[in-house]
Image 1 (cartoon, rainbow, N blue to C red):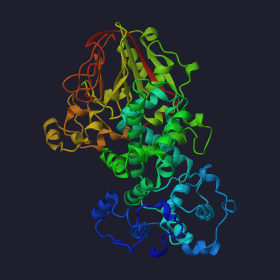
Image 2 (image 1 turned 180 degrees about the horizontal axis):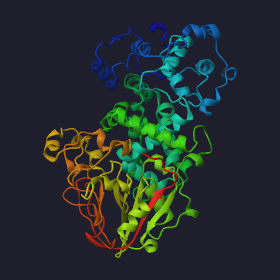
Image 3 (image 1 turned 180 degrees about the vertical axis):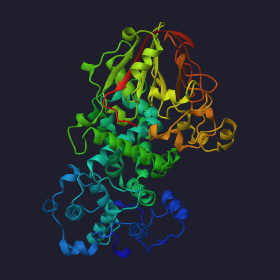
Length: 563
């Protein structure tokens, strides 16, 4: 098998890759397999990499009836002659994506078309899979014939291991993955996200290209190294590599532009990133790219799966399950219908770019404003209860502007009885708009090690409830059924009560953020407030430490899904 695995390859483009007999291709030790995949152990031996891939793909748990090489030979045959790509038009589900040649012979592109055409016939349930041309082209490099490539692709598509997927096969899955990537950029690439917000007219449109950066735009030497770890570790690798690409792009863009950043059409930014990725070898090696990718301290696959499911649910609730015009899917705060006395339409768009993607699909809806409803905490609660999440905006008498994104319904405060009890989830954040925009997220996001230690001692000291959360000021009072599915405290074993004090309220005050201070404290008359560094968000004061409120607004998210 491995002796013929380079038949489709243009060896003049393969550099110093050897065609010698393969080395080790079977692994019993998963740790060793993962280490070899990440370190590029197979990069210099084409036959070895081919052998490892075949072993990995054969080991995938698949549906009982999964098309194999024999099916391909019966339907298409294994022609050794050149195939004309036009005789095998690509199916609609690739959405116009062309086949990247990588290091294939020119005539091998027809073979990729033939394989994909047969896949389309055998997998009628696939409705959207723009990554398939790149994956098929890559696997053909290490295939002995078209039939073997077809079987490899089929096994990736038919993988049925719970919680594991390798390729998106519907528009719903693809679009929710784009939203999930946007959420991950918010969390792990804040500098790059800030650059996108400053330069692109539609940030989410830019992020919708993330899969193509990895599977399509990366040069072959990079894409092959990504494939090594992708087949071993799964879909999460694609997120890691795309985040690393964005980090390197920001670094290059910042160095080139200095401080001169101007707003551009999203298409121009998308083209600029694509050109950067296609020429990434000028500034980054494959080793450096993977080193950066695996240095990102991503949350677990479980957490990312929960976020993906939440994003899918939000799309389903809006009826977005098949491809539509982009503006129906992506974020667009309607400037004509938005009117705030605190922030402009541009500023609300910037704030919207920070919030979880599933809520960014919603339009802002004014729930409460002191200019209309008066300075009463009771009226504040009356107008805000029943809405989740909410966005609070504050303008001080010194014209400073700050606020908070609050993940949980204010009605939750009642679960603590008369005690001031904290609630909410790790999706909460605080921010300031003036004198400059800055967001401060849950400290656990940047320091996940704070979530690892046992909290049993604290539970004994404070008297935990059934769900592990004592009803007291020191500890957030939470009910798992009301928590947002991503970054919620119930998924972590917190070692410090102070790192999860998100929001609290009673008849006397509102508090956001706790631990050695409050990010925001507002009195019962919604008139005076203070802001300090707190452990939950690790924020500096958001404005003057003691301030007087000129105006306070609370915005809801029209048609937001219940958490």
